Image (cartoon, rainbow, N blue to C red; front, side, top):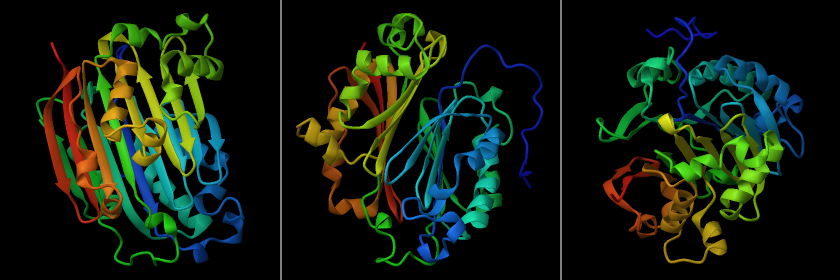
Amino acid sequence: MTTLYSTPPPTDGPFPNVFEGPEKLLEIWFKPNYSLITPSCSSESKPGLRAIPSEEWEPILDLVHCKVLNIIRNDHVDAYLLSESSMFVYPHKLILKTCGTTTLLFAIPRILQIAEDRCHFNEVWSVFYSRKNFMFPQLQTPPHHSWEEEVEYLNNVFGSGSSYVVGKTNSDHWHLYMTSPGLNSPPRNEESKFEEDDITIEILMTELGSKSAATFEEGQYGGKTASEGGKLVETATKIDQIYPSAQSDSFLFSPCGFSLNGLVDSNYFTIHVTPQEEFSYASFESNVPLEYFAKNHPCENPLNTLIDQVTRVFQPGKFTVTVFRSTHSLKTCPLSALDFGILSDYRKIDRIMYEFDSHVLHFGHFVRHE
């Protein structure tokens, strides 16, 4: 049985001077039942998990090996910009995304405990854990040594889940672990968020163009870093034009590297960039509806246009796209709306579709034309 570590295990020594860009992504949905929210964990403006103060999340993030850089909020969600990626907290849902050699799975037992202690959330509705294949798997520490080890850890916590590897195992591919929805479905009139469309798009890019990568170095902005440098990057790269009305929070690291969280009503998007040539990587993730994107960018194929706009920022040599959506979203977003289409600068290597009980997955792998 895999040990449920409460603290990170010791390492064998310092890691080489490289950085693992591809993130680990965890999403936990608790059963929505506002009658279970205690007065100590509820307010009119911040129900459920959102009422847990940031200082109580920080010890959990310490287990993962990341720190809070900044927080932005709106009426629906709290967005935490982290030293290694991002966390988004909704009333009944938490999304934690970390890169490098962070030990994300360490956070799970503590997340479940704080949700039960503070909010009486003792029933998990669904769990999703995913990641791209690592560039430097030998640098990861338990329980992230291998996908098999991660799945074993998750099964020890949540029972039996389903594990998938999507794409060519000897090339870029994507791992997914998911549990089935809880036996007791949420009442339809209790929490509208479980009835709304749920579409998450990830564009994971490697081999960034050299000119693009240089725009994520502090030397391009007179040494300005942190939030001030982040805003300069947004403008210089035209990232701020993807969702023009979004509330954004960005950070330029020293000497290089960039992170951004953005909020659009109840939806989020996030960008993370590791620009060093030897292991360059950038990720774009969004659950903003394609209909919203199309309002700002009139087009026949919003998904194809979004992919084109994002890849023009980073000019990757290759990238993967995953579109993970609830079956409920079929009512407003049919299969035809998720055709990756033709990208002028890239050729498609793979296109794969999975149908699950509650979700549909579309996966595409693209490489730049020679």
